[in-house]
Amino acid sequence: MPEPDVAPPQYLCASADLPERGKAVSFHVVQWREPVRAFALRFDGRAVAYLNRCAHVPTEMDWQDGEFLDRDRKYIMCSIHGAVYDPLSGQCVMGPCNRGRLTRIELTESEGQVYWHPTRDTKPAFED
Image (cartoon, rainbow, N blue to C red; front, side, top):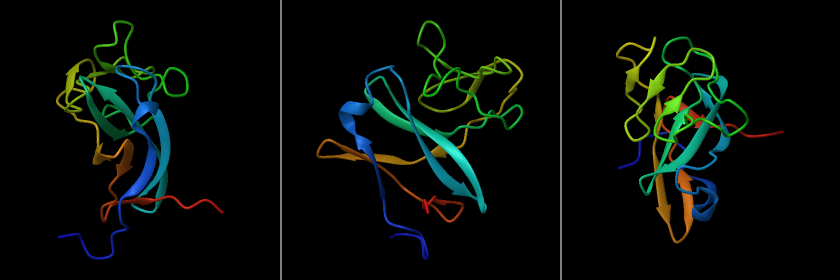
């Protein structure tokens, strides 16, 4: 059952826009009334999404727009602190993030489309 006062799933992109271990699709959300960027990428066949905030220090992590994976394309890596995260769980595996975890955004795929699911804490960012 959906949470009260939560927006329905939001269209993010076509499934084909998330190539395996490729460039991420960035999008905007509002978390606790503050605008925040998020990103989605495909890893081992699964589309996953997280807030673009390092668990070590809440700063954006991408090297360039949409580039979050390390050189070997095995881990999400913060470009500022070198914190390393498992792409499927968001769990820190190495670096200054200690036992931290990225904040997950739930995704679903249906008929070649990817949708993200707002919660009470993370809502759509509507552009003016």
